[in-house]
Length: 218
Length: 325
Image 1 (tube, each protein chain N blue to C red):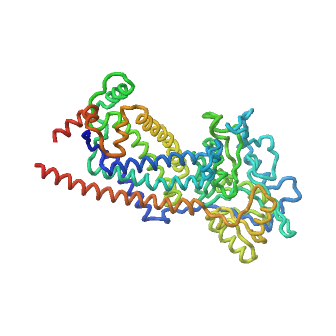
Image 2 (cartoon, one colour; image 1 turned 90 degrees about the vertical axis):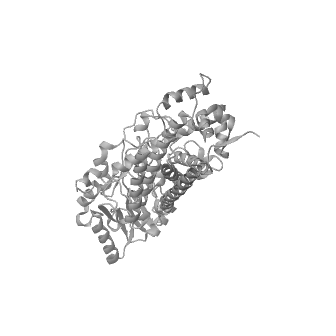
Image 3 (cartoon, chains in turn brown, blue; image 1 turned 120 degrees about the vertical axis):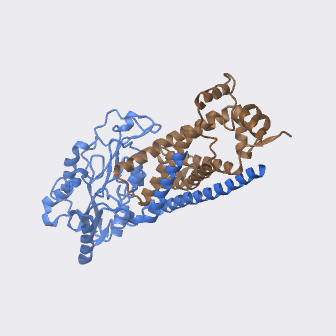
């Protein structure tokens, strides 16, 4: 049997999938909050009849956000306090990322990486920022619907518009994220490790040589 | 990271603050309200156009849509909503007619009901517009911005009375993806937003007063006094009220000799485009808000869990390190 290295503790796996799965529901219902599904006959697909009523769609959006908000806040506080900053970008990540992406499509050799690839660190900040904005403006929306805060008309408009437009960025980031995992075979072991937590030693040695050295030093 | 953590702490503080302060933070209701006394409305039977309707059309005529033609259908559908050839229509709500006088016959009694936006206290149209095109003003009126409106007509779907009306071929959607998204601009009464900001009465109210003087159907005023007046009159004259409870309360109160249940029934039987349901729950309050509270609590619980989890795992980390040494 091949040697395996622990890449993600259970807690990170739970964080990732709770945010990912609730995020997918939020994306679908978020799009459904735009008046689009009726026009494009989505509401007529068997099993999707409920999307014809905006109150249903928004309710499901709210329910999914229970999990999403919990996941995001947990992530920030847990890793922030533990100082797990390995996913934050370092100097030179931008140029290194270009090399990594280049090697994925067969141009040049991939530079050695630590536990995370440089493009993963940049993508993390990007998607993290999008999620933060969505969570923040979404909570403001909850508060104004509860009428616990009363926003000025302009602020209510701005907050709504930011939430809607950032939602589109989230969709884009989601497509890029899932796309790079599925389309490039070199990333498949990473997908597996997001389920099991374990990754093959050979893979680490080859792709994450800096991390591998650190592990061996201990 | 430090910054975002700090930012998040401040934000959590705000959330907790709102939780503690609760409902008393600011007044939710608007400044003004309108009383519509149906016992006094004869639909201006001796005039070609009811005064309130005429005044509204005159006052707002410069804001009516001028669509570019030909108008594209809402792809992949073959339909689109165009009222521009029916501008003269005054017996229903259209993008060119923001108030109309509805007729109903109840047990031999003819009644006339001026109908327009109710201006809800917690308006679903405002809360649900994905573009922020609808706003609720301090005066209590809800207003559609014709600059921001995409014409998806969601406001009409979520409105218990389906008031806002759509005109295709105008608005911001023409600049973005005219074929695939958006459908025009929505129009409805905004209680003469510019007038009431200047503490002037809405055009319909003035016009009615000009005809009927002290006996006018409409009374515009401070919300509190309008509500008091309505309740007083209802008690003294044995009238029924509509609009104080519907959808969680509105800035429009109707008074009628006939119970509104009967009016509702009559309009339903006639299959009128604009109904007057008596039981209208505010679904933002009944469906969303209980879940909203759970979302906020789950955030706070998760934060506490994260802090405990991080501190205890730090300890074990440190213990491990000292063991190694």
